[in-house]
Amino acid sequence: MIDLHTHSNASDGSLSPAALIKSAADQGLSALALTDHDTINGIEAAQQEALTQGIRFIPGVELEIARTQDIQQGDFHLLGLGINRPSKAFLEALAELTRLRDDRNLKILDCMRDQGIPVTLEEIRALSGGGSIGRPHFASFLVNRGIVKNREQAFSRFLAKGKPFFMPKGALEFRRALGIIKESGGLAVLAHPMSLYVSWGRLPALIRELAEQGLDGIEAWHPTAKVQACKRLEALGLSLGLYITAGSDFHGEARPDRKLGITAGGRKIENSLLENIPPLASRCLVDTKAPV
Image (cartoon, rainbow, N blue to C red):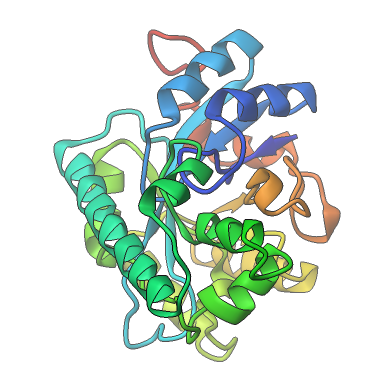
């Protein structure tokens, strides 16, 4: 098995980068991409552990993309796979997203206090394990305080879009994100296309437009999508000359239903998928000197 979409506690996962790699190796995965949200802070530790464990490692990232006129409701995310030489512009964009994320967190804190919930940034930071603070950490705080029963309730009552503590994320324009991924040696892949919440009547034209702008692939297989939808996405991607990827979107304890190496319909992500993406397969890091 392999996995091309995972998260560590450098963003909103529960496992450290090294622990994530060890868990993947223990479960028999032969390759793994770390794609934390808007950060590559976990890459070095993950890469070193991958060398120890003897599995192929793909440095990656998941970037928040600004909504467009065609994408109003859903989540627009772009995976950068094979970020082997982060450019200056890439690092500047991540720093910008970090500042925007910090501002958002302060606004969420203000909303919570306005609702009579005493909370400090230090309390939320303690729940993040030293990684980027995000809504899952606020959800954990609400659970720990007994305000909600579980994280799902925290989101449905307080943190989801339209709820009292929701604040929009900072995001990059698609063309800018595309450019910084490519100049950093990566492939740009549309993450979980069904999360765009675009109808099937409009989705093919939208993905075609993104492909014409330089999109490299689509994550046709994702655990939140139905198998039939994944098959349709795969066929669409292939018809447009795009690479097809698959991931678990693993987060650890935050989303215990997601398992490493497993995607939609409980299907294993086969090694052959990576080999069908020659540019990515050739960029898997397996030693400290250079990609194979």
